[in-house]
Amino acid sequence: ATSALQTEFFIKTGLVLMGAELMIGKILAIGLPGIFVAWIVTPIVLVTTYWFGQNILKIASKSLNITISADMSVCGVSAAIATAAASKASREELTVAISLSMVFTAIMMVVMPLFVKFTGMPEVLGGAWIGGTVDSSGAVVAAGAALGEKAMYVATTIKMIQNMLIGLVAFCVAIYFATKVEKDAQAPQIGIGEIWHRFPKFILGFIGASVLFSILYASLDKHIANLVLENGILSDFTRNLRTWFFCLAFASIGLSTNFKTLKHHFVGGKPLILYVCGQLLNLLLTLGAAYLMFYIVFPEITATI
Image (cartoon, rainbow, N blue to C red; front, side, top):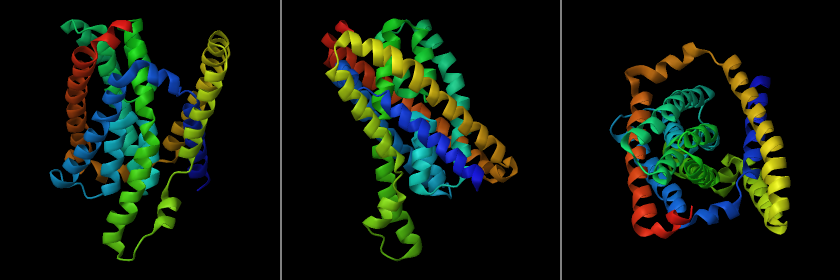
């Protein structure tokens, strides 16, 4: 029990620190193309993958299904943790989702830049594609940097925009599971009190940190803001601290996980199939949306990046 509490503390503290790095001004700077790629494609992939898991693969655990779907479509480990809390997924189910995410993130961060270069894809398009599909923020930065400065900027910004969906996704999942999934199983009416109880409260800290640091950034002189916040507090302090909290959390999960108990989740390979099929849909839709928005609808924004 103590280990579980420590793990939750490490993870939730790391996520709140991540919120401090989400500058609203940066999000607005990239304009509608980035917002469209992050906020339109992501929910479509999430809902479609969850439907696929329930109706085609017949995954017995709805909480496992939604946790993997959010992990793959939103932003990897962070989204998996928030969604697992909202759906009351077990620690074993969360570990399955995180394991899948980490394996495929390691593969995609190497393969995608190579594919972009091999096909001669424009740098901005490649960056947008990476930002919308690679799960981990750190992996997005690394993969984008492998293509160039523009690609890294676009990839990182789109991932930041996508990260902002964590709170909304967690809230929607909490409502859905409290009013639909468990209502069917338990019969009693579930009200707003249960939804609030279910809602991951650390998301409020995540959003609050984002708003606070965005206001600070906007109120300071641009040079000072970049020096103190962007290249000071956020670059050296919060980012490194967040990384350490996540490392401690993953170590705690590893120490407290009995992998024998995970075996039944992989019977028939359904979680793996769900992740692969969902990620393939994500790759195709994100590439199509990025090309449409950056090169057909808003080419003038692309030219200024």
